[in-house]
Length: 154
Image (tube, rainbow, N blue to C red):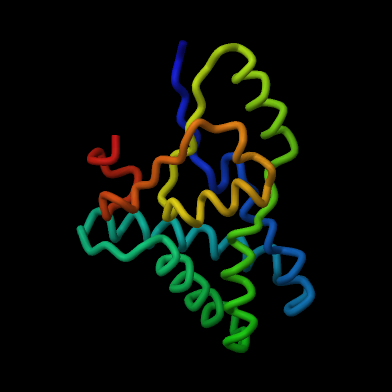
C-alpha cells in the first residue's frame, strides 16, 4: 500500500474559483488579478518560510490581496475583501480531481491532503468541494509554523 500526499490549493482545488466574483466587481481585469493574487500568495508564504517569519497562510492570502488592490488600482470595501477571503474556503475542485482520487483509492492507495493552509481551512475547502471523504487525513504545515517547500515539513 502506497501513501500519497496531495497539495490542495492549485492542485486539487481551483484557486481561480474566485474569478466569477471578481468579474462582478472589476470586469475584464478579474483573470489577471486572480493570477497575480495566487502568485503573490505563494511568494509571500515562500519568503516567510525562508526568513523564518511565520504568519499563517490566511495572512499571506490577505496581504497578497492587498498587494493586488494597489497593483491594479482597485478599491474593494472591507466587506468585499472579507467575502473574497471567505471564498477561499469554498473553492471548487478541478473537474478531474474527484475521479482521480477515487481511482487511486480503489487502487489501494492511502491518500492525504498536504497543505500550507491551516488544517481547519483545508478541511473546510475539501468539504465544500466534495473531496474530503477521499482522504484519510489532512496534514498542515501550519503546525510547524512554516511553509512548503521548507524541508522541515517533509
